[in-house]
Image (cartoon, rainbow, N blue to C red; front, side, top):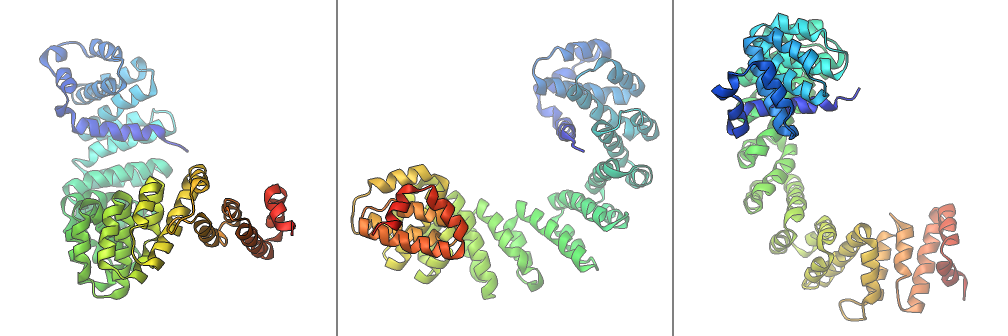
Length: 442
């Protein structure tokens, strides 16, 4: 069962939460508008051509009807609104307020909504409103009276609403519900809210869970949620707890998005070599996406030639995808020959896979030279690709200009492929007359 309109309902709750920031919302609540009869206001709103503004105004009217006359609001919903998105905008707001003030009546109205996503969203909206005043009762009602996707969505909304006022009680309730799958789902919802406001409390509560698998899952949710807001504090918290060092790499990767230099400067605090290397790799990979030049400069300053060769493959490939010529220019400035060769291979590989036509056009135009001898470059790239993508490797060889070198390399790589995958190699050769001529002719 797909629920595309549920996303709209969730978005509308955000609109309601931020309505005071919008001039249109203020206009809708003005004394002049509120003096107009609700049905007349509805007619005016439905003439609004902009979907976002119309839905926002419908949500505000639904909220008002939920406070003042929910039954009349429900009648408007049933008889005056025809478009599903418009219905959802009005209904979510109406039911949330109605559920807050008169939960049983609101839930009875939900029973009349057609089965499917509209009913699921109706129940979850009414129960969220109820959970704002009586979360335990709302949660228990959902567990006892709903099943399947209806229960899943409703209990999630209850858990989040409850977590805003009493996250620990909400988390304890989530643990007491049904099966393990439901527990994990609800805990995720609680922890999403909890870590936004009290991350340390959320982490400490998670660390106190007795079941190890549940504890690890809750800890990872809490820790990674905390890292989204305060990665340095999260890393410092984890540092003296070796059992949770496995989470540090992801925390570092998140930190890099905020402040890569600070994240890099923090790494020496890690005394365990394996964890240090894992975190350094996470740092470089994430940094390379945003600023490969800065990542490379840091790596060259802080890593040995062997380490550069082993750990920068992803950096070069990512850089080639973004700007292959810039990446090549940086490669040529590397002084260590073995590092330069490895980097060149990675750049060309990334370029070949992301933009093959551009790569081939460049390769065919290259003249021989110390750093860019086309035959050497292409032969290195073919050797790199032959195990993982033999067809691409042989196509690269065909770009070589030196006939003797081309033929020798093509025969060698084709024979290696044929030994491993004879049928695939033979099929490829039938479709490549130029290659067949090089391989079969003396």
